Length: 173
Length: 427
Image (tube, rainbow over all chains, first blue to last red):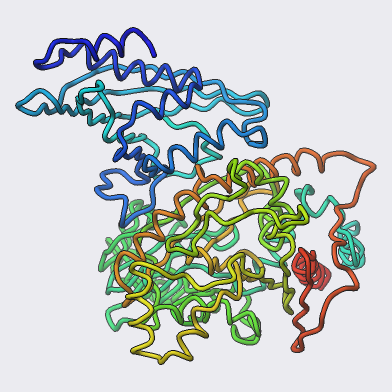
């Protein structure tokens, strides 16, 4: 685990600063870039959801299909498959970089234990033999501080092209 | 054109093999647009997409933009999405509601039945010219609806839809019968993925129970079980391999039907049970009785595929539509359906599971797409000209009415499709 996460765990109680929240979210993006998927899943709460809606302004994952809708159990299955030697659509592997910007704390609970943080991102995905792919949009992280440190309760990824057709999607955004 | 005469097409499909040019030749793709997509019934959408007056749903038949619409009297129409004036596509959003469909170019308006409703500065056109219905939004030559499933055809002389579907119509019945109200709805949008390969690679795959052991190995966990793919206690995390080491799915059979339809036997040997499914089942029993309910709930088929481009995903309670864009580019849609009258959670669970079984990001589909793209690449090779579809040749069991059951991941379903393809292309 990176020093950034440790820093948050040992921070004195009281509201987290913008810098601490941003470091946590950028660290999550680094884990995805580096395909350290087990560590990535470990950032998520047991009741967490990773969600990428399939239409603009989608309010629910129940009444409309989603590009991704993973509860923690499904996230673990996804990661198990991403690490499986027979995942042909990752042979060769993707190489990705996520660039984050425009962080804003949209909401914080009075006790300083829950936060909703918005940011914008661009992601490049390259894979030998495939066309370069560019994804972009908004992240909304709902974060919870527990005794064990900060955890992700909901990550919502709103892609600008979410309602269009996609070639295979193997990498979470 | 002499190279593409009828005899040429008859030779491209043989008993146990298909010539690679069927997948790679751009000229053959052009002829398919005329001889297949211009002559057969193609599923174009579900009535539930346009329930009310003024509702419209835009899609394509072959490569042509069309629209399903509902008029003031509640009647369904299937129109070309083209302005009768200068040809602009009139409706640009996928779905919406308008009492008058207005062309953005010169402001011509059309009623949902396609008739011309208004023309700016109309008096300057020669008298009588605009009375010709061809200057409205023209209707397609034929369409028919079966239990809400709308099929259209560009050939006015096509056989009736029911004759074309034959025994395969059961695929629609088996899905719709599971709705307590006897009706399904397309209600939750659709997944949309695209791959760089011929449309028939996806169609072949839907009659292929031989590929999962190699292609979908990554979906099997360390405990030898595949991830749960539908709700309920019998819904999954099922063992993937039989004691003899064969994938269980590959021990299942496939059926080939007349006119190129096919079906795959179900992965599941037991009814879905547990939780809300018990409540749903009790509701079904109260409507239809125990015997009929058991009949409806029986897992007969994984899917039933209608030639040329529709897949009724019975196990996943969804409908797949394949849209050829070019010889080497294909778009696919997956629409989860709502079983009208069933507890809401039955339908919302379907939406959740389809996200992981059939979306662009799904655990299964992604490796299929990799396979299709590698086939399209590999089939560029010259000198190795044949694609083999020989599994189970000679082992088919004739079930009557032209239905052939091929045990043990027989390629009989693919052969049915390619035989229909050959018959249409050589006629």
